[in-house]
Amino acid sequence: MNGAESLVGTLVAGGVEVCFTNPGTSEMHVVAALDHVTGIRCVLGLFEGVVTGAADGYARMAGKPACTLLHLGPGLANGVANLHNARKAQVPIVNIIGDHATYHLRHDGPLTSDVEGIAKPISKWLRTSRFASEIGRDAADAMVAARTAPGQIATLIVSADAAWSQGGAVGAVPAFPRAPLPAAAAVEHAVAILRSGASTAIVLAGDALFGRGLVAAGRIAAATNAKLLAPYPFTRMERGVGRASVERIPYVFEQAEDLLKEFRHLILVGAPVPVTYFAHPDKKASPVPDGCEIHTLASAAEDCAGAVESLAAALSLGSAAGLVEKAERPAMPPGGLAGSGIAAAIGALLPENAIVVDESMTSGRNLLTLTRGAAPHDMLANTGGSIGIAMPLAVGAAVACPDRRVLCLSADGSGMYTAQALWTMAREGLNITTLIFANREYAVLKREFASFGLGDPGPRARDLFEIGRPGLDWVSLAKGMGVPGTRAASMEEFGKALREGFESEGPRLIELGL
Image 1 (spheres, one colour):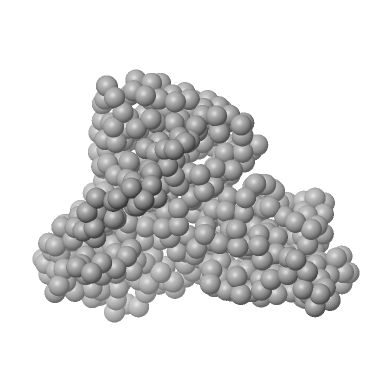
Image 2 (cartoon, one colour; image 1 turned 30 degrees about the vertical axis):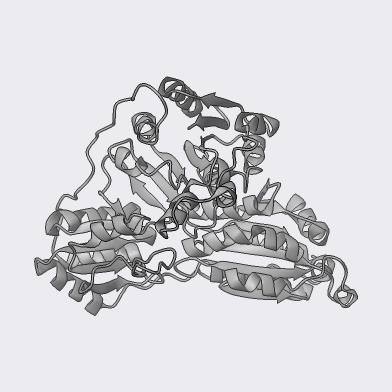
């Protein structure tokens, strides 16, 4: 058994079922091993940012890691932006990078680079395997690291000669570590806060935003009048009718400040203290009001769902009903396209058990309000702020959940970062409907420019925010990558196209001419 075969065999033994990849010459022996060691589905991306974003989406929905397979330092560097987002999402990924043969590095060939240096900022665990006999052990260690709560990126760099040399062995994969519950004192303090009658919000993250954690949170909110909040950059949240009502802390500072101003206590469950994305000369770093006390019930590395269940038990709620959303789908609006109308149409037509991937920073800001009473669904958000995540994230979610419909909300500017994901959607036959908000500009940057009091942008500044010269033809771009597309200019056209997308097999794209 060579090193590459021991690598793939160990991944299979550890429960890795999918490899998202864009390989190169230094990975050829790993590719050969993937071809004849059964158990791993290989999904090709035409750009490494698609590969890494898809691994993120898969982990969010599958609850376990996929692996990536990338080519040397340049291939890794191409995928770093979405690995940054995955690191902020705190999801498990086993990131495998090929490197030159150990004896070839001294020649400093064109593709020689500091692979460890590129990997270090986005990797919680990092190791290089230089001998075939090490790879199985190292792969097992990488899987354990990736699955250590709350979920981490583990990067294993494999030298080409270690991959092709004999002497490999499948590594023994130990039981994966379980996240600990928080200390009893943290639960008792949260109970005291909730029983004090003071205005309190519980900020949920991680697995407290879905499954048993969210159910318990809904029961606590019903019994105590605490408000349930989620950070703006949340990883995964269950929403819709029958799910606990959770409000997202807004991106815009003034809106977040207004939402939080009433609270005397914040109880954090796997979530950080809310902060702004960027510094501003006239604003605080955090929208949390002065004098508000912050208590951590559970850190991100602890069992967040278990922590909420422990809190519910300590409050002696028994089988008390939770506070959940009621069925309240908006009506299909008529007339021309507008942000609120588009969100209302989505709320009206969203199928049950769908997965919504949202990167509509400006055009989709009414989406959460108008889908609160829609059919039960999951929502995935951009956790790290690096744009171009929506379509890759949708690919990974669809691979993890092939029986569910995926709705992907992107914009023309951010979508161009990883438009190659459309090709992977077509190749894999994924049931993804992609909406492109074609406003022909980086609208969020125009808003940021204005927020600094810089007045109206001049012609050169404005030219850096507008992308309509020439206009992007997303229907043609999609067609060129095998995805049927249509352009909607009215709500009637959009509603028809959205229904067809949800009912058709394979991917669809709808360009919204705003």
